[in-house]
Image 1 (cartoon, rainbow, N blue to C red):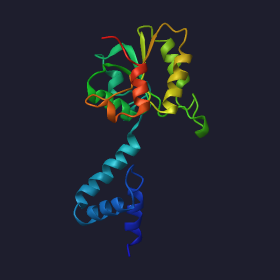
Image 2: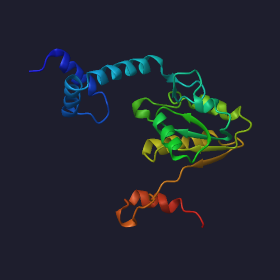
Image 3: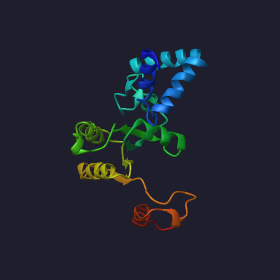
Image 4: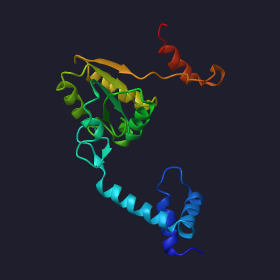
Length: 198
């Protein structure tokens, strides 16, 4: 039988995505048996991050500063603004090294059934930013290819009609190195509709 403190540690570890009861139990026991210094370091880092990390006042990415380092970087391209659903998406794009513009993080996607509308995603602030940034010429919508992501992209397209912007959507389709016979029908449909001349 596990003690109450060990059970509490196991339950606490289960808040992490992908961590079930057995994984949480293994982690908790490993920390207690073999990794106490690492566990204390983890506890300190977690407490500091939870107390100090907030959302950037400009792009809504995670940062401990009022404005994140990406928004403060003078080397970024001010003519492009990429709209993403989460800070994880910013990280993925930055790791790809293929985008040097600015970001806006929605912190979700439209989902009326869950009570998530334009206000919860900061869309009024985004539209205001688009109106008041004269050097901005392209809005890149990089929401996920889910029903909610597509609805969010459609809403953004409609909300920006009339603004002097090129609005583009990231391509969806066959992954590099993929074979057509193993790609699902929905992905193939997106790939065909998004084709371009070569």
